[in-house]
Image (cartoon, rainbow over all chains, first blue to last red; front, side):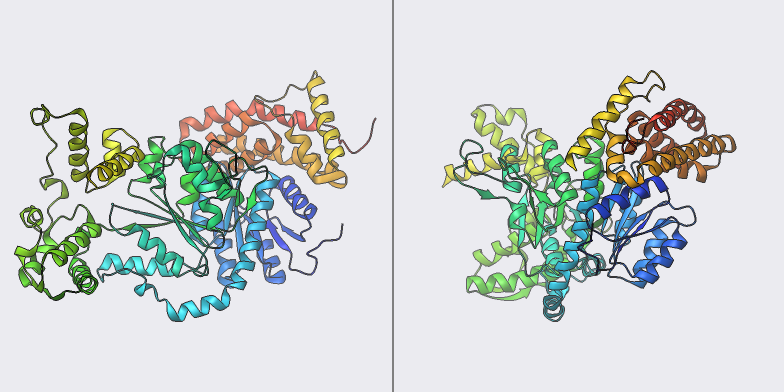
Amino acid sequence: MKSPASSRPPILLIEDTLSLQMVYRSILTGAGYRVAVAGTAAEGLAQFSALQPAIVLVDLVLPDSDGLLLMQTMLAAQPNTSVIAITANGSVNRAVDAMRAGAHDFLVKPFDEVRLLSAVQNALAERRSQSNALAAQQVLDRQIPVENSGFIGSSEPMVRIHATIASVARSMATVFITGESGTGKELCALAVHAGSARASGPFIALNCGAIPQDLLESEVFGHMKGSFTGAISDKPGAATAADGGTLFLDEICEMAPALQTKLLRFLQTSTVQPVGAVRPKKVNVRIVCATNRDPVEAVRLGQFREDLYYRLYVVPIHMPPLRDRGQDVIEIAEAALYRFASEEGRAFDGLDPAVRRLLPRLPWPGNVRQLLNVIRNVVVLNPGGRVTLDMLPQGLVDAPVLPPDTPRNLVSLPEIPSTDSLVGLTLAEAERRLIEATMARHGGSIPRTARVLDVSPSTLYRKIESWRERSA
Amino acid sequence: MPKAIRWTAAGISGNLCNMQNPPPPTRFDPDRLPRLLDLVGPTEAGNFLVQLDQDLSVCARSIAKATDRLDWTALREASHVLISLAGSAGALALQAMAEDLNAAANARNMTAIADLSAALAPDLDRLIAVVRATPNPFAGPG
């Protein structure tokens, strides 16, 4: 068979187990690719220098050298090479190391021909996409420096985060953002998108904890008209809507196990199959995900698939809580003050020194979100001038302050209603009080509240929505 | 092409099922080896069977030798290769045992190594025997 890609550089396959090398080579040549093979690291490096392949498949365990080192040597010489790391089941952490070192993708042996071809096709598609986006990227380089991407704060932890975002944004690597509720995980995801070659593409955010589990599959992958009751028209899911851009999956650890399996399949094949669709569809999406939980603990508890964790947890970014960001709290408060004052048509004149001393010592369980609410409250309820202590919400000023180095768990927490205080209330009212008190204790975090109360986050979102509707 | 795949898969599965000897390894998927032969095609199928036999035999010798000498590096490398070969050829229990051996080698767990090596040896021998008994489906009858 004549290769359709005969004029292009070959794919370099470095695999020392000869029977497997024969199988992989046959699959690739059968699909029309030119393939060069090597059985050792030395031979692989010689072939790499001679052929300058666009794609290299490299086994991470080679007889004469570490495959990871070989990969790094090749990427140092030709940074635009797409390396697909091959490892064996049971050594997936090596694949994660490879992804962190710049691999485009990884394959876990034993794998079938569909997975092999899919990885190669994805690498080729990504190279085409990068080539097309090069001009746009040069414009972005000039116009969107990361420090202007929405983050405020010059504390040491935030400087590190800016640096990580700047280095990871242009790769295809999946970013896994962790941090407490209100620390700016979605802003971080937006900064990764804005700094990437996909910045001109869509940024689609989906909160996996806010959507009832039975609708989540349809929200992520879409559905076809008539595929279930209520599916009155075709609907593209978030994964399709994010084609050419970034899909941000917030509260990823809240995703039901069945959907985790489908997400893993999607990540491996880059294809989506809407509910009720006969054929899968190829999409080109970068995944950024976030959680306010400890993902390792979620894996340990069996709530999050280990293989999905390894697939997603490639470049971790931990957003620090506001209480650990020193003087950032002042910078954020002042920036918000002037922005909200402008929106509300008020004239404020900065923060009083007493306020500047107080703010960094508060525990801020709701983090930046809570601080912004406090500043909004000040701007709305006061005519202007310098912000003094008496302008701050009462509960905030009365809140226990943190002497330096105070452990977080020594701060007194909002009280959960006692049984006596609930007697005489309707069941619905007692439930509401319990939910609200639990939320207050957990900094407003619905996923954490849901875990404590042993209900799904979507149940809480629905209840809160119904309370709002009733009070409106 | 699809016709050929169906023929070889069914043919070899049938041969394996009908075999009195050798017995297949534990939890053996008889469709995988025929599929590999289809993938490598008529030109390479014969060489592939010889090479697979050699690779598995090297694994068996390396694991036995590395277990005797507690050579962790050799154990890691040989078990790594065996995971892939066993899984690709359909010996699912052997693949799982090789994964355990690889984990024990990485953890330098001396007590587990001897047990695991002894446990997987019979299945590895059976897989080698199956590979040796598998005919080249493209070589024609006789």
